Image (tube, rainbow, N blue to C red; front, side, top):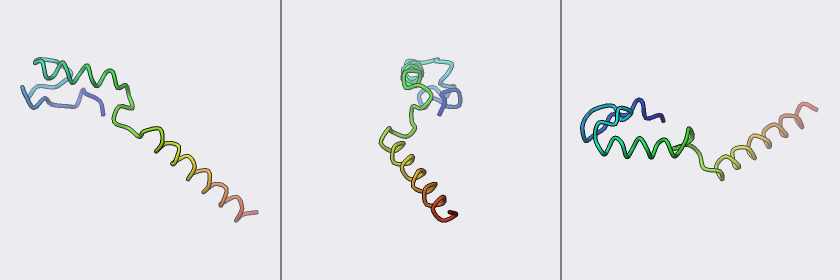
Length: 64
């Protein structure tokens, strides 16, 4: 999630404007996390990749 759509519960302003200390702190935290901040962790990505490889292998085995 990007911080340009978040609204601060403290001052009711958009977080990306940084009007209050809470906004500024959350904006800094979200910028440090990067684009995948709340995304999948590495183990979940590895598991997803393994499932995808298994599905492709099964499909290739059935069509051959």
